[in-house]
Image (cartoon, one colour):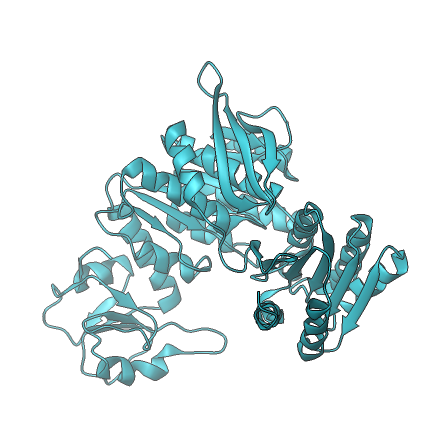
Length: 476
């Protein structure tokens, strides 16, 4: 964080300094977690539905906190800033810090799928453009909600030239809030798909929530629109009313300013293509090779390239940046276990659209196909129907074998089995599934590609680890 006095922090958060005669004391780091606190930190006591950090103020002091930001008075003899709501104060402080960085360019990414991959791709391009990684700040992990986004902005320093942030949401108004804090110079809605339906009620609700990002674009800001995505035309209409500049992209041949041609895939599914740019006069073309698998990552690469162009990057920088990003563990991470078996680990999370994308990728492999699925979460009243549709989709795509585990995926199993296109097995728990898989691997004589996917709560990485261990036992 940039260096701020206690008085500046109090002013930014509309707070009152108490227990302090020296309000010019300087802080350059904050903490919201006593497990990670460092000596001299400003400790912000956040509240949530199931936690209240005010219960840990004594511990924060013992660990060396230099001051406390609180919303209830305390008898602790330490400099404090008293605010109405610490969660709101966190956002106010983040917004203040963002505004203090002169010349900072901020790119904000939202969408149902591909946010993290697109963030990594764009960050890599910007590092090539800036000439070093210290000039680029990117969202770490899944810090993309109303707490995570402010914490990301509070990592800004005077050295940062570019910030690339993810904006996630599970209810209306969340992106409106985080985008207002961010005030992006370039904004992207990567796609709109059935995810977090429990919080939005419908796909239209998802689209409305994602669309909140546009209103926070600066007057000179640029919106990046995926012409292949649902609601693209509605977003273009919205942006026209807002009088914002728009850059478009398409991986499916639609008439866009940035596109892809001659798309090819390696034996492990890694993509290469020609990047076509038609923004300033004559068309420009450059060859791109990704270390990422699947057609969906071609789209993610185009999204990152379009945002990079909006931020002033050239094609050579885009080419270099896109080439260095490798698959993140748990996100379509493909690896050869032995001469016969390829494993695709896509266990980080799942929603109906991302599962269909994974099935499409699995089908590209020249081998037999085994799809292993855990439950998809946060689908609310649509859950049974969406799980059923996945089973039907897998059958339509010619998947030879499906294994499911979990309460909700029983509908997937039933739909696949009813289609009669392949073998289907449902397991009560992962222990039974893992034992069965060990037998499958030991008896494998032909090439097989296994894809494992499920929502975070399904913990399908346990299945991936079991498959790897079984392969190691067999001398892989």
